[in-house]
Amino acid sequence: MTELLRMRPMDKNVKNASPVFIVTRDGADYNEDGIQYVRNEIKSQFQETNNLLVYTGPGINMTNVLKTQLEKNKSSYLVLSMKTGIIFIPRQCNEDIIKNLTSVPKEDPNATSWEILMDSCHQEIY
Image (cartoon, rainbow, N blue to C red; front, top):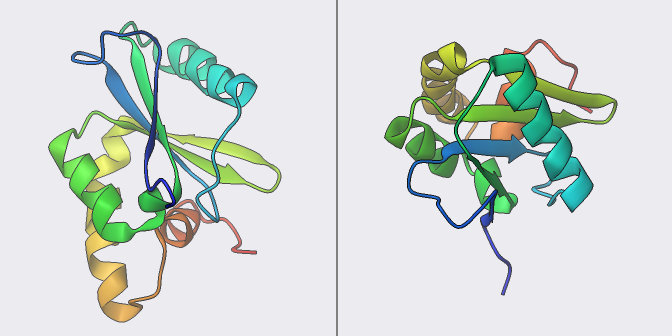
């Protein structure tokens, strides 16, 4: 059975950790070096002091799953993985991302979270 969401906590205290969703084209997982890079960049770029709970997996590409997770915790971080790098989406964009995750599937029911985020960030879908 395929794991839809994989949780990668920094430590055992996940209760107060800030969620980080890494959205990849096909829901691929990140290796430990990639996860650590994302954590370090979020801590550096956004001066985050909380522990980070990183989520990966194909479930994040389901628009309803990502939308529900963002609605539960609007201060989550989003990381968009692309062929040539990654984009760290600021938390203040989460409301707009939720709107896009709601409206786009009505127009295109097959759209993935990755495709919606790529379009939202004005990136060419490959």
